[in-house]
Length: 503
Image 1 (cartoon, rainbow, N blue to C red):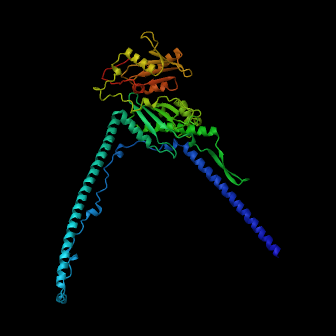
Image 2 (image 1 turned 180 degrees about the horizontal axis):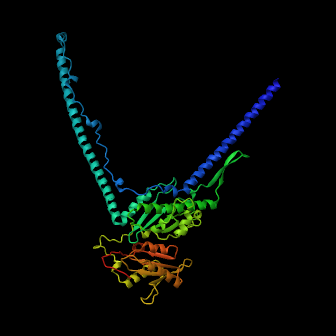
């Protein structure tokens, strides 16, 4: 009987142990599945950066930016209520009764009365001093509050004036106003956790171009692990690494989506259609593992016109962002972004940075920098030759006749990056026609040059940029020219006095 009971207890123990093992295994299965789902959700969030943003209106109503003065009402606290004046009743001694007077208390009462009167007088004096001090503090508090109100009203007025100036500048196509507005548009665009928020824009009215410099998330934004597995033999949950190629391709799709999303938001927010071309440069801020120095390599660069962008169907399920930016916009996307292999931006942001470039000179009467539009065409060609020489190129200036569309040839003397560059200088006040850009490309091919560079004091239209995409052509407008001059300490300005220039 005892043996049967023991065997029963043993069976129950083993059953409980088996049940516990199954429960623990099921918990590890659930943990692996849950952690895998979280990984997949993060990847899905990254893979849908573009599609998930399409319903959002990127426009910012400037009226919503206006502020009203916000100053809390004056709170005097304890100073608001005067301290009650001292009452004689609190000091007056009780007069002696008939029996006390018979016993000689009158004289003692007179002494106490005199002492009470003196104490009452001191209390009144102290109260008066405190009341005077309180009133001074009330006056000071009111004065300080009024100063705060005036300061807040001043700051609010200045802020609203800037908003009004931005609104007026948007109507007129002002460089700074459009840049500032587009900064606001892109800053307001919501991105997932872990994405940098640093981005800046520069508007070039001469070319109706907006340059965007965008700090991208590092490749580490892609989850390192692909899934989690329950290793039953060891009773543990372990991650499985994501293949390097897969992580690289996901990251390329992420940065391509950021570029396309930026194009969509800028073009949609620009209801005045001031912008016909966008240059997008995406870079990362990181540390070079070889030198330990901070570096900022560009991992994607592209240029797109409004007409090109309008042809896209971004919500098409089969839409492929990397193929789109590479084939449709001729974007340069780093082949190995995980190794921080950089690309060369199609246009440096400095050539559009409104903090550097301001061709419209508002202090022309006292500005002594030479106005490039006052030069003769040959003088302008010599100026461009000197600029390239200062940039470190070996240059040769061509004669006016028989130059075959060449104003200057610049040779890069560096052993590895050496090359022959055909340079054309256009001293214009009007937009350069696309035919000139096509002619430059023909000259580059005829001369067997590495690249063709056209520099003008005016700007280019979207057709010129569209033609230049994917070709060894660099178009530098007036803003870019001034930026180069600024970088190399060459004094120059571009001030259109109403004279038409064309060459």
